[in-house]
Amino acid sequence: MQAVLHQKLPADLPDKRTHCLAGGLISRYCSVSEAYLAGAAKEVRDLLGHGDAEWRDWQADRVGIACARASADDASLVECCSAHGY
Image (cartoon, rainbow, N blue to C red; front, side):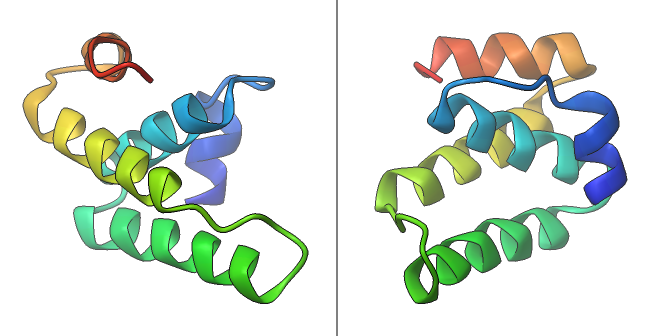
């Protein structure tokens, strides 16, 4: 998962867009289960650490996963996240 995000996810994106694209990319290149797990783990880490756990982050992760299911390629995934406001 880390390799996919490092190679495919642009740096310095707005937070919710990052969540949407990360969920979608992990779903596309790893698995849907891993995408859900990564999103949940990130929010738990934020909750228990110094981050800011947000329900909207989890929602953006789920939109990204749904976009990945409906997208034929990375460009379609990006368009789908944009269409949902991320």
